[in-house]
Length: 190
Image (cartoon, rainbow, N blue to C red; front, top):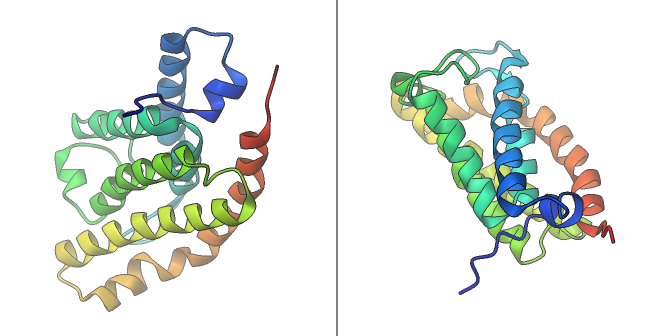
C-alpha cells in the first residue's frame, strides 16, 4: 500500500524544503486560513455564509492524502477545545449545534477529495469539476442532516435554510477552483 502524501503543493512548490517542514507549514497555514475564512461571513440564520468551503475544497485537492485530512482534523480539534476558530466561536457544543454537520462534512469532503486528487482527479477540468461537486455535496449532505436533527426540521425545510441561500456562492467557488486547481496540478517546477 502506498502511504505517500502526493501533495501538489509540496511536490510542485515546496520540494526544496524538508518534508516535515513543508508539511507543518501547510497544516498551520491551512488552519489559519480556515479560521480567517470562517470570520469572513454573511450572517444568515441558522448557517452563516463563509469562505470556508472554498478553502476546504482547495485543501482537499491540493494538500494530499495525508495532509488534507490532518489539516481539517486539527482545525476541528482547535474548535472542539474551545478556540474561536469557527464562524461564531468554538467548543464541543458548537460542533453539536446546527452548523456542526457542515464542519464534520469539511473533514469528510477533504478526505474524499484527497483520495480523488491522488488518482489524478485534479489534473483536468472535467474531473476537477466532478471532484469539487462531490466535495460540495458531501459538505452540504452532512450539514443538512445535522441541521434537520438539531432544529427538528424535515430535510426539505433544512434545504431551504441551509442550502438554497448558498447555491450561487458555491457555484462561484467551484468556478474559481475549477480554474486554479488544474493549473496548479499541471505545474512542474524543475
